[in-house]
Amino acid sequence: MNNIKNYNEFISESSSNNIINDILDSLEVTITDMVSAAEANHNDRSPHPFSDYDRKITRLVIISDMVKSVEKYTAPTDKLLTINARTTNKGNIGINTTIQRGSESFRLNTEVILAGGHNIQVLHYRYITSTDLPKTGNQVIFKELKVKLKKLTKSESLSSEIRQYEQRIEKAREIISTNSRLTDADILAELKASGRIVDYTWKNALKIGTAKNFDNDEETFNKSNADDTLRAIKSWKVTSIDHYSQNVKLLVKSLDKLRGKLDALLNSI
Image 1 (cartoon, rainbow, N blue to C red):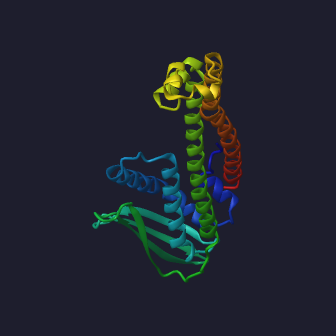
Image 2 (cartoon, rainbow, N blue to C red; image 1 turned 45 degrees about the horizontal axis):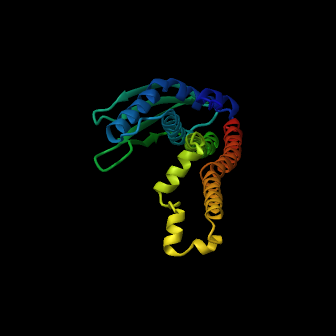
Image 3 (spheres, one colour; image 1 turned 30 degrees about the vertical axis):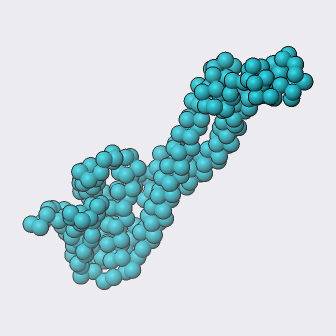
């Protein structure tokens, strides 16, 4: 599976906005800590491990929200003079920056509020920004990140579907392997145990008056019984081996298509 580009790789391919790049580079430690806090919260609440996908999507959501809170006030030509991230008295994250636009300097402060109380299942962050910068309304990078988030979410959906197909194929192959090892005698014993074949002797035929169906001939009766047994064994093999083999072929075909879709999607991220 292809690797998903990190932020720096993505940003180099995105619309140029040096100020956003500088801010995110300066906040790398803070972003990493925020991802770790989300992981710890997840591990406290969920029996399922925090996956690599969870880390990627959490990181991208954090970056996307940060960009949204800042980009609409900044211009690509702005310069980052100072930046400081700290924990506030309320336990939130305070990000204080000084931005230069032309010959003037402006403050741009963002408070990152952790939302993850008793009734909230997933820790997430809210951003409150205050600034004396005139609003630019820029959303170029945020929109690009939003598209990337959608693709990443879709990639996980495809990955989950692929895992389900792989499990179904593995299970079917295990059944084929187990059933293929059975001899005709084993199959006959199973058919009898399940009631699909009943021991029916010449003596039974004479007793209940069905011998006439075989011209009252024991050899004809035995041959008919043997043929019925062979047909039952053959039918069992078709149902218990051949049908599974055909199903595996169809599943593998579908799996290959899904893998192709996922590769194409990841190449576009």
